[in-house]
Image (cartoon, rainbow, N blue to C red):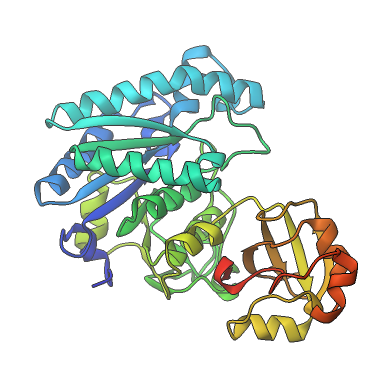
Length: 376
């Protein structure tokens, strides 16, 4: 059965594999590593393992740790070069910290550093899946972070919320727990009078997105509520529950699961492994704008035909991932294109009977086949 309540996070039968994301501000304070707090969290991980649960950790903190060691201002985020240098130094300290604390409970830490491309490229994504699976089978606790020492501004997750959701997809996890500096999602900015926390969200709708703030209270991390909702959307596609909870308390998992304090995002669907990977992509090579008739047909489960396309944007090759947007600019699907951008532009608006003379060969059954598409 899928997870239905926060208490299920501590139930091995309901949640056999849990991904826990730890933000920079939770791990590193103004006086350095919050060792006592982290030791409490590691004790909770050990307890989870003791009751039969597997745990994956997605840990921020490398840049903050490295910046302190190198004496860089702005927490190491003053420039891309600073962030990369800080990450290179801090990652050693971060992995050593997890190794030591997990080891004190007889657990083996396994470091994995991932870039955006590792999870956006299908073959590399499957390699990540295989590695995580083997580590879990061997009894290790994977500790995963973005490889900030080589990631660029153009090709990076930018926050570990979305990385955690993508890792959960790859690992086929039961749930993702985002430990944050706030109890959960509020219906407006939590500092506003009358703000109310939302305990359960069934699907990330436009109304839910309107509640989000991009602010990160600590100023140390890179994510805010907007990135957490994006992570919830990614998890939802794979049928994975996502929880936002306050990590600032001692033994935060027990507080969230035991006292029921947090917001749980319940998935409305499970798109299947390949479509979940496709729908969760953060980088797309181009976009196809469609008319109202085509948008309605896609919602009914049809493939995208050239006849319904009104505009082609970007440069892409056959097999590349593209966004499909309606005439208002709203992205309604992701899919793999059967044509390159120039061919798509050439047959835009044409019926299949008219395409052969333009293409010089018999047209394919669709520009984006429904089997290679996932609705948003």
